Image (cartoon, rainbow, N blue to C red):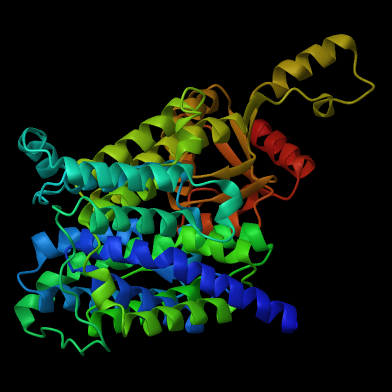
Length: 541
């Protein structure tokens, strides 16, 4: 694509619009994470700039996201005793992301089952909504994640700050009902921020606010490098890195669908890793590809990395003199904004079709969602992937077993055309002593157990069995060992085995494991005619 004035104009509009939309969200996520409003802006600047410059998705906007804010809140309250330790975890997460990109692991994220993604994202949305219920009511935040918030509800409901509740409700209503014709000129998140803040500053003043926010260039935060802290930081850093990688690459797929382009997943991971590495050093909230910012950027005309870079530059210019204007923003305003963000993150497209979803996929989605909300993010994704793998294995088992053909070989070629009818009947009885087992397609661990149970009975019914691999595409180690069991079962019943049409990848898999050691060299055939000749010789012998 040639870069021209129209492209530049689109990038400028996209960058400005994304900055306007991203500012209140960055503030809100910074507060929600426990690092502070300015950390959210620093994260938006660092991750947004370096992911745009070094990333592999041209039109993607990066910065603080719901999943990363929730994960960072857990790290601050559970895994780190000081902010230095928390930012050490962020730096390590950035290094892990860079390593994942260098190792070219990015493309594997596309294989994550949609049921896991849906449950995870919906769980994140539920967490954000639950965490914002307390500031929505004017109460202080609670420790212990969503469960701690639920336990704090009775006290919060008994001491509602109606000024804060009114501000939060107005903010939420403006964000939801902002007229569509105005959204092109004034984004709903910014309109909600303005409406709620003006209400809190001019009228309903007795509410908790962000308070003093330092301005100016960020200071370098040196990581805590003691051995004990580094060992403790490995697990949360890995969680943060994987979470940011999945979040970013899923957003990249959305950008591809909107722009009809193709991103570079490994380069995207390197760019996101550099951004989070820098964010950790300047005290910023870690981030990832932001779906809302990316969609806004593309719709406003952003097509290249220039739009993301310009957005980061605008936020940097704002933060140098923004502090005094941010201090008066009520927490209830940010709660109202995040309520809408959490609602939008929930995968309503999947939820609205929940009555039509296959039972296995629905179960995987609900397991992932429940673990995300009530346990932790990495457990949710890990267990979700295991459950999805088991559900897929059941489907593969049925598909693979349907591709197995096991029949007695009744073929007129076992007798001559000049023979009488009685001779033909005798020949058919003779040829029925030969069985044909054709393995067509791919075979894996999914079907290996049932395969041996299903086929062994048929093998024992014949004196000679032809194992046909002519249409076999792939065999994994488990299925290869099942073939060995089939051969052993045949030998135990004095049934001779003939191997037919074995070439390519299946041949390599079987020979690498020495599966065919008990089959004599003269019992290998290239096609059915050769197999019949060998079968007739064995029966005559």
